[in-house]
Length: 135
Image 1 (cartoon, rainbow, N blue to C red):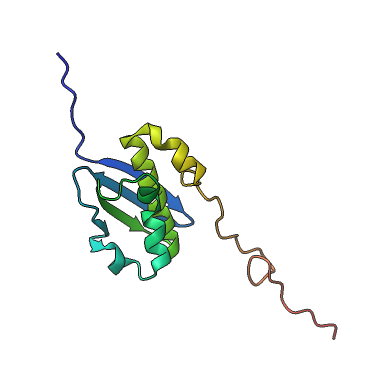
Image 2 (image 1 turned 120 degrees about the vertical axis):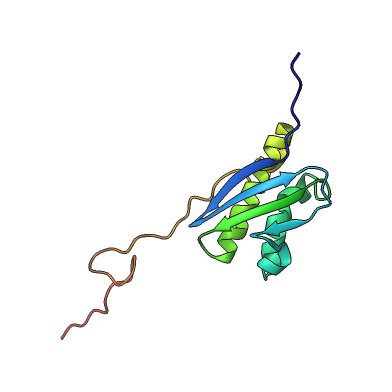
């Protein structure tokens, strides 16, 4: 007889630029979101970043279903927020695969491929050339 084991949490990983986030969704929660041990609004100072992190939960109407714990490292604040958004979306898919069309339509499952362009030799930055002087 095989007993179904209830998972303690659902985990997802998200990346954006140099930032990496690992989100864990704990069922039977009250909607609390912590980032690196701090409350969401204390870690991310801007409202747009709070909204980005909460987007997958709002789209799927699961805000009050889970407590979310996020570990982020690398990159800047907005990159970390968008990485966390993707991590939460991927964890929600593990919880319920039927949420895929909703999350995919919102563009939350596709990794943003844009990264910083490398500096080229002979240039000051990736594309900026030294000032041209005729004499």
